[in-house]
Structure formats: C-alpha cells, structure tokens
Length: 333
Image 1 (tube, rainbow, N blue to C red):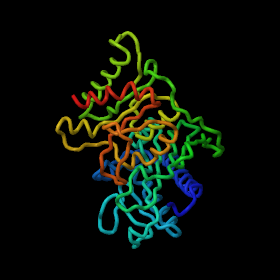
Image 2: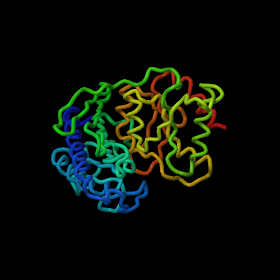
Image 3: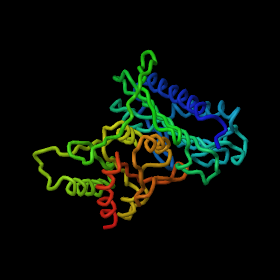
Image 4: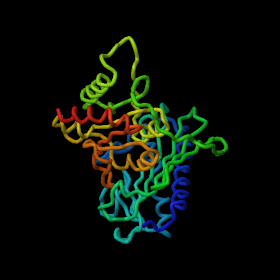
C-alpha cells in the first residue's frame, strides 16, 4: 500500500519532471556539452546532458525522503557500497524500512535530444516497497513528461494511476498553460497506410528485426509492391517515445526484441531496453495498449537497471490477434 495518496505522488512527480524539462531547455545554450560522453555504466552510456540531471534527481529524493523513506532505482547512481542503480533515501536508512520504490529515467531518448533532433522523455513509476521482489507490474502511479527540442513551443505530460485510466495535458512552454491531451490508441485493424515498427536502432540486430518486419508486412499486406509505401517505419530511439506514439494513436504496432535477437545469434547481452525505460508503461496499459513480452505474456520485469526487456505493443486486440502469431512463429523458427 502506498503511504501517500496517488494525487500527492502525481503532484510530486510532475513537479520534478517539470524541473528536468526546464533544465533541458536552459541547457540548450551550453554548446557541445550535451553530447560529451562522461562515463559508461553497465546499462548504457552517460552523456553530458544526462549528468546535468543527476544532482536534481538526488535532491528530489532527499526532499521526499524527509517524509517518505524510499528506494531509488535509476541508471548512473550508486549506494554507499558501490552497488550501481539503487540507493536508499534518507542516506543511512535500511532498504527494508523504505515505504516505496521509485524507478526513474530522467532522460529517455538522450541521443535524439542531445542533437536537437527529437524530443526525449522524463519517466517515473512508484510502487510499494516489496524489497528486491518488486516488479514493473507493482507500479501504481506513473508519469512521463516530454523534453522538447529547441523549436518546440509545447510539450506533453501523461500520467496514470492503476485502475483509473491514462490522462494527459499539453503544456505551452512560454507560460506553462495547459490544454487537454487526447489519449486514444488507434482502432485500425490492419497496418496498411499506418506506422508499424520493430526497433532497429544499432548494428547487431538489424537483420533479424528487418526480416521480422518483412514477414509481418507480407502476411498482412501480401507481396510487397515497392512502387507504393504501404506501411511506414519510425525508428524513435526512446522506449517512452514509442509507447507515446501508440498511446496517442499515431502508431499501430511497435516492438523491441533486441535481447531475444542477441540470444538467437549467440551474441553477448547488448544495448537494449531496461526496466527504467519502462518506468511509465502503466500509462500505456491504462490507455488500452496491449503490452507483452517475447512469450506473449503480459510485460513485466524486475525494478533494476540491468535486466534486458523485450516487449511488443499492439494498439488494440484485433491487431494483436493478427500480428502476434507471426511474431511467435518467427521467434520459434
């Protein structure tokens, strides 16, 4: 059970993510520092733009822990024993005494944002503290806030409380005024003339991801006519960004199967989606998106920064009914 009301937690998380958004906007004027590699962790590369947010996150957790002891799960942090990815607040408190576990990705989509190409997202999810056994499926409150590029005048904020649906607003950046954001996955039952993608960001799994997408297109659309663009691909290098596109009805099907593809090719575990990238997945499921793992089971995973997550997202049940057998057969073969 959460020690605070969901509304109080939502207010805290939204306020913190607004601070992150403001810091990103201010940081646009620091030429060249955003894309500087500061260090490498077990999960990913930490760039300059990421490092500037870390002190803000720790300050936020210290303040919250004055009333609610918590365990923070986030990339790039360490506890007093040098363990990466987890830290208890207030400092010196026992993990077992924390009321909640807070999983955060302050900037999901760093690579696109640091080159001012595409918006990133600040993510946070809160679950009652079940110690290390706590999982993504235990998250009861989640918030995601768009981190804008320099040409954007608006940025979206979405949130969800378990069992209460997904909501959102569009924020005007010059005066912080808000207007309602339409939440609604696509109702299309096919992929023709729509967006459908399998993550194909980096070398190593490009062949398998492309073969699977070709198999899906062939099964649903027939023999490819290269003179026509029958289905569209959008490689948004952000798990939250991909889920957002499903939530608001832009995309019909998205999947990220990199951990599976690494294993299929006898490769070491490579760069992939991690639980902190899925910190706000509750918003997608509350919006009606059907999220599964590589076994067609409901998406889940431990609250950590190192586990590889494979996921498949369908805008509606009819699309899942048509596409899921193709995905499962491809992976079996």
